[in-house]
Each structure stands twice: as structure tokens, then as C-alpha cells.
Length: 203
Image (tube, rainbow, N blue to C red; front, top):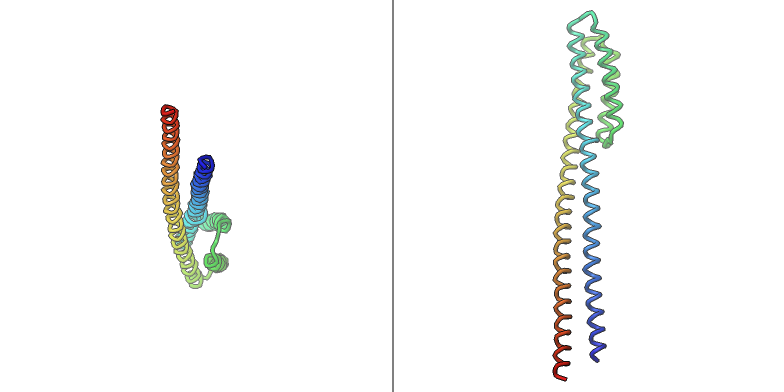
């Protein structure tokens, strides 16, 4: 009867330890997933939001520079304008290599058409002014999209951080429970040894 009781208790202890260990492993796995998601979010904010926003800002600056250069009628004006358009094209290719949302893609295609029209209609001052204004408006809208997407990604990152903290706290609780469990086991074992010693002494 005593042996059966001991075996039954051991089985319960092993099961309880297995459950606690599984919970700890699950918490660890979930924590890793959260860290990976957070890393992906931060990378996306940097590569797909902040950098493209700087590209758009630089394109806008180059367009303004072209307008001022054309108005000044300097001898090397055309060379400067052509150089700026080459730089804009390089920036545009970098922008297109980033992750674009559907809304962003639509606005970008519209800007591409406006940019092409602006290059073709430089001689027509009135029409060029209208196309220039429309192109800048598209760039402003693209920056607004970048800001909105960055905000969304930051919120997602904050959720991942909160989840990671919760998972870490859960892991700590499980570790404490495991520690207490081991202490109880050691204490129970010591009591059993003392009882056995007492029986031997009584005999």
C-alpha cells in the first residue's frame, strides 16, 4: 500500500513538473515570436517608411530647385535641371524598391505621370506651373501616407512589446512555481527520511 501510494505521488509530481515545464517552453516560444515580429516592425519602419519619406522630401526639393533655376534663366540652367531630373529618377527607383501599400502605389503612379508631363511641358510656363503644383500635391499625399503607415507600425510594435512583457512575466511566475515545487519535493523527501529514521530508532 505504501509503495503504491509513493508511486502514485511520484506520478503526480512528474506530471505537474511536465506541465510547468511545458508552460515555460510555451512562454519562451511565444516570447521569441514577439521579438521576431518586433524586429520585423522596426525594420519596416526604417526601410519602408523613414527612408522613403526622405526620398520623397529630396524629390520635392529637387523639383523646387528646378523651378527656381528655370526662373533665374542662368546660362547653365538646363544642365542643372537635367542633373536634378537624373537625381529624381535615381530617388524614384529607390522609392519603388520599398514596400508600397495599395494607396501608396496609386499615388505614386499618379506622381510618375505628373513628373513625366512636367518634363515635357517645361516650355509652357502656365501648364508647367499647374503640373508642378499637382506633382507637389502628390508628394505631400505620399508623405501623409508614410506618416500614417509609420503610426500603424509603431502601434503594432507597442502591442508586441506589451505581449513580450506579459510573456516574460508569465515565464518568471512559472520559474517561481518550479522553484517552490522543487523546494516542496525536497522538503517532503527530507520528512520521509526523518520518519524512516524515527522508525529505525523505535525498532
